[in-house]
Image (cartoon, rainbow, N blue to C red; front, top):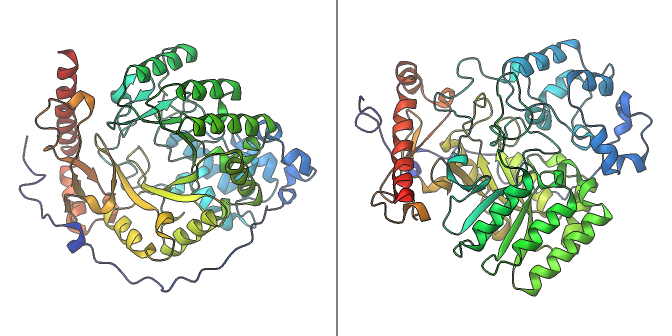
Length: 486
């Protein structure tokens, strides 16, 4: 294969090659009183009572799952052109089926069709065809399982990518489906573009194999319990799983991953859930372990009184922290002001700003994704405002590597938008692989963010790069598989 990635690339160290542009400074902090928007402004919810609105059962039963239901809720608030735009996206681009809880829809601006188009939450929960790019709707290296998590399953649904940490995907559903979902390969219903993969083991058997693996793997210390979203798992089953995790001596950190703390706070405010969280938190403290909740808020307007109440309820129940892991999405949270507004809305209401990820390279995501250089400038721009412990790190989740702070890049070709990353550890499968710490792994900027020379290069070489990326991935995968079979 032609060697074009390194030999004829103009490479540069990111700090030197990516100037920091001037942002409006200083940012003016203002404490904002939270407001629960009046859902009765929606024609379809004009008669909904406060008791119904605060019911998790009512929220689940009235999620918007298709264009017809959206029309019923909206009445005449939106033009027909918007619905046609949405329907076309569902047919031709969407990697996630539509599922929007009333709680989330209620935070969107429906004062006009133009305002709805521009709304940050709408942009990632109800993407439309006109949002997507037409030049490069998908990056040439985009893939369904962009982080290759399934390849790293120790047992079905349990990803063991880091030496001391595992990700337990307990179920493939959520109370809400984000358009940019990194697990779009597995999570949610199939769409015309994506026939979703399915777990082969029944859930009880899958859960048992996960527990058995962690019992016999003492180097595993941390468990992220996810899916999907744990709010979709019946509480008794979730509590049983976490309770059994707490019986494993080496498990010291457990994180429950749930966007529903924001998307469906009514779930976490239910009496049985609050009591169950308190039981688990009490047990965790008694044995020197920590239980935390990780949620996923991308826009400041999503922080409402009900969301803050749910966060406080979890802290009062004894969880160590409620932390936010957002995703940088163009048009949602990619200015310094938007990001700081969001971080202060979180921090002022008991949620710790923790990470912001670059949007992963899944199909049809290029209109959302930022370049590495843009992310570095955002990281620079938010420094110095928040307390140090609450200043989020912006990270790139590099395939076959894991989370890397955006300034940890080893080398960065800013013309072609190719960054190069290395590992600092070996997983159990790579313990004897001599190249594990020397191998370089690639990540790719959106092509439309590149200078014209870089875009021209991609137009010429786009068909070749996925093969190169596949070869690099195969080298890592084959080394691991060879060691596993010995």
